[in-house]
Image 1 (cartoon, rainbow, N blue to C red):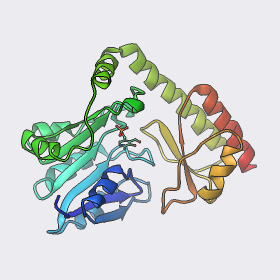
Image 2 (cartoon, rainbow, N blue to C red):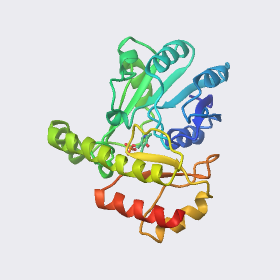
Image 3 (cartoon, protein in one colour):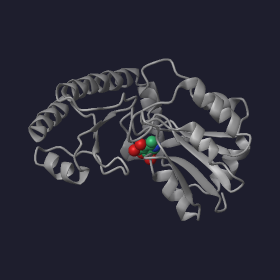
Image 4 (cartoon, rainbow, N blue to C red):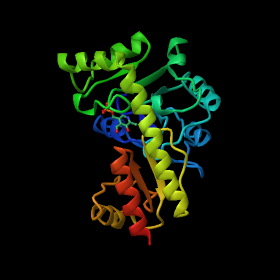
Amino acid sequence: MNGSEVISAAPTYLSLLSYAEQFGSPINMVPLDKNLVHDLDAMGGRITNKTGLIFVCNPNNPTGTILPAQQLRDFCSDVSSRVNVFVDEAYFEFIDQPYPSMIELVKEGKNVIVSRTFSKVYGLAGIRMGYLIARPDIAARIRKNRMSMLNIMAIQAAKAALTDEAFYKQSIAKNAEAKALIYDTLNDLKLESVPSSTNFVFFKTGRDIKKVIPAMKEYGVSVGRPFPPLTDWCRISTGKIEDVKRFNKGLRKMMT
Ligand SMILES: Cc1ncc(COP(=O)(O)O)c(C=O)c1O
């Protein structure tokens, strides 16, 4: 990257961006559109000869939104002839409709990097296991700047996770059940939200999140941090069904 600029949405997942900043890269943040989806036209419009990489988090954290598949594919295909494109697919497994991974573009030899993790659908966040899919020449360049090394226990756990179809199915099903319960409550309370393709739901309380966080703590629920500029929105992750019920009860109390 050598200090070249990164273009990303705002708000989005910040890890890669913080890492790029440590390497001296300025971040050029483009607000999400009115549906809280990446504004690809605006992001593409920001490309200059200083741009090194475009970061697309799809589904996006914290909103849970996904891009229209063909639009994303066309965008990545087009801009990757000029800049590196990084697509974070951490939540890809939770998308509940036929949806192409941008791994397809990697296979076509494009300048596209896709990341995946075992932290979400496989429930293995603590083992620190994830991977990138990229053209071999790009992978070789990235490997030199690797942030962490794998250990043998993490590799064994990941291998086991990949063969544990029952857990995978349960993870998807329980998450869908939990989200349905959350959306029921949000609809009841007439709180605006966006469709989530992840294991969390982003919704508008209309209240300052800095006040919502301690208020929900009172009911035993930790909600997400502030995501500027959407500081009157709130992110709640799914959990066990009893946890979700506790959230629903707490939210009803807080909002009335
Ligand atoms: C979009 C996104 N990418 C990556 C990660 C992190 O994955 P890992 O636990 O493998 O670092 C997260 C976790 O919150 C995330 O939301």
